[in-house]
Length: 296
Image 1 (cartoon, rainbow, N blue to C red):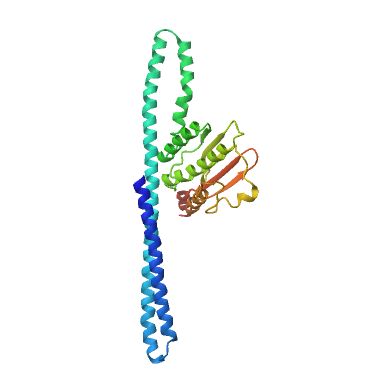
Image 2 (cartoon, rainbow, N blue to C red; image 1 turned 60 degrees about the vertical axis):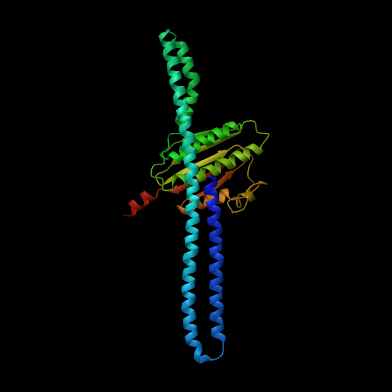
C-alpha cells in the first residue's frame, strides 16, 4: 500500500511538472510569434510567422498529449490503489470465512452430540444462539461483486468495534453493474465512513445506527446509506459535494466530491436528505447495458 501511495505521489508530481513545462513552452512560442507579428520588416515577417505558427501548433499538440498521458497515468495509479484496497478487503473476508467455517463445524459437532444424547431442546437452543452469527456471515455474500461484499464485511466489523450497528439490506445482486467493483467500494466506503464519523461525534446518541441498502429498479442500480445522527443544515446541503468542503478539523474535504464524480462519470448521481431523525445519501447509476439494447 505504501509503495502504491508513493507511486501516486510521484505520478502527481510528474503530471504537475508536465503541465508547467509544456505551458512554458507554449507561452514561449506564443511570445516569439507575437514578436514576429509586430516586428518591423514586413517582407520577412510572413515567412517567419508561418514557420513560428507551425512550431507553435506542434508544441501545443505535444503539450496536450503529454498532459493527457500524465493525467491518464495518474488515474491508472489511483485505480491500482483502489484494486489493492479491494484485494486486501477480500483477503480479510476470506480469513473471516475460514475462521467461521471452522467454528461452524464445531457447532455442528455440538448439535450432533446433543441429538445423540436425545437432547433436542438443548440442540435447538444452541442453534438459536449461533444463528445470529451465521446470518451475519451470509448477509455479506449476496451481491455479485466480491469487492463490495468484502467492503461490507470490513465496514460492519469496523462499526461494531466503535459501538455502531451497521444494518445491511441487500435487495438486489447488482449483476452487470457498469461501475467497476473497486470504484463502487470507494463510493460506499466514503459514505459509510462519513456516516460513522458523524455518529461518533454525536455523543448524546446511545443507539448509533447505519443502514446500507442495495437495490435496483428496472432502469437503475441504486443504494442508500442512512444514519440516525445529527441533521445536516439545509444551507450546507448545497455545499457538501464540493471539493475541499469539510466540517472536520483533520479532514481533506474530498470524499463526497469523489463519490459524486465517480457516479456522474457513469451517468448517475447522488443527493442527500436530512432531518432531525435521519440523514440519508441516495445514489444511483443507470443500467447502461439495457439502455443500449433498447436503442438497438
